[in-house]
Image (cartoon, rainbow, N blue to C red; front, side):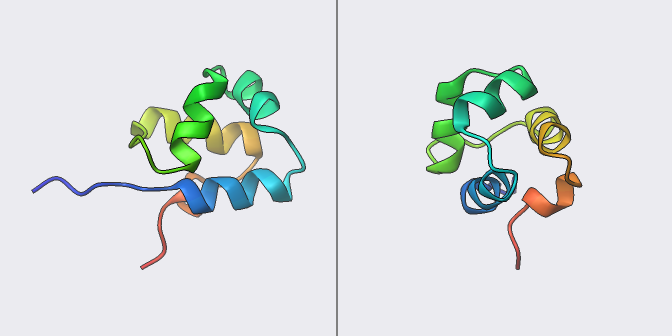
Length: 69
C-alpha cells in the first residue's frame, strides 16, 4: 500500500523560517507558485523529486519536510 505524503505544515513552517514568500520559493525551486500553495494546503501530494527541490531551495534537509510521526 502506497503511503500518502502530506508535507504542507512542514513546508509552510520551513518557508516562513526562511522568510520567503510562496512565489519566491517557487522561483528558487523552479516550480509553479500554485504548486507551492497546493502542497501547503495538502491538496496535492508532491513527488519526491519536488520535495528535494523545495528542500534545496530552502537550504534544509529533505527529511525536515516529511511528516513527523
